Image (cartoon, rainbow, N blue to C red; front, side, top):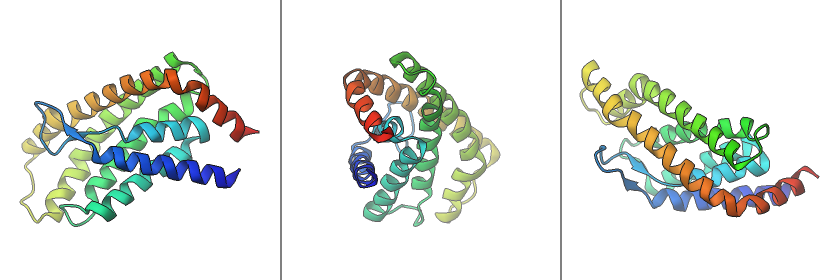
Length: 190
């Protein structure tokens, strides 16, 4: 059973990596903020195997992305930010879906994940991530006003939109995948 879990998590990580490459900017937001659907396989991993599997998918896709594409900062600041954002987004599902085992419960947990990702990534971008980018790029530090503007006009709406879009897309996919996910989950439990 452990081999099957390893294979499934590896496959979901590979799919997540490919989905990460198929990204697109959202109109009206900075071009460096791109929406992708790479969190969908992590949600599937969480529903089947639990939180550690979802976190593993988030980690592996970002490691692969850094190895293959690198980072403009030279260090994986963007990948770390993506890992944190993805983990914040998917973790509420890991804990709430067990209690609210329905499509509605899934949507509620993903919307809570959206709220967690939006709020916490706004704070982390203000305090840590955006300053790290400027430091690693040897750029002048952003003023407090510029940081606030970047977060309020870019990061915050981006994460909210991304979370809502992924919630809607996954909720639609979940309707078709639910029997398979339940079959996989029951096979994993037994």
